[in-house]
Length: 133
Image 1 (spheres, rainbow, N blue to C red):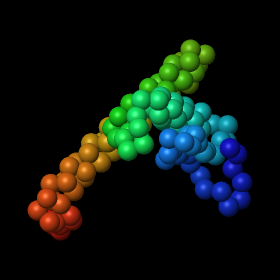
Image 2 (cartoon, one colour):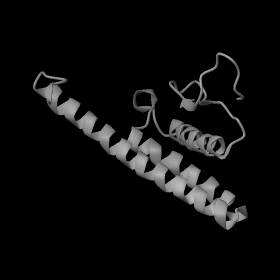
Image 3 (cartoon, rainbow, N blue to C red):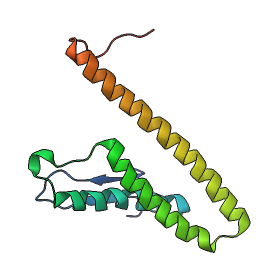
């Protein structure tokens, strides 16, 4: 949970098999970003544990677009609690960062969806990647 020499930075949620639990790995340095990252990964983890009850092994998994709904919901839930205690200056700083994060997340998801769609369309014609410029 805490950084140490040789350990990668960041966080992620991992799940593969119905028979294994969901794991959340992260580096926590006590900053607000780390709290929101943990909330984000917990959103993925809760989603995984809930779908585990409804899906069989061949369908176990969540598309990125759906998975991000659960994770950003959990981020927003935690952020609302943090903002209740924040003064005006901190609230403004947090909301500006949240706006930036949301725009980045939307852009990233749209581009990932476009890439997936293009790969499917191109694979049907026998071409996976083609030079565009």
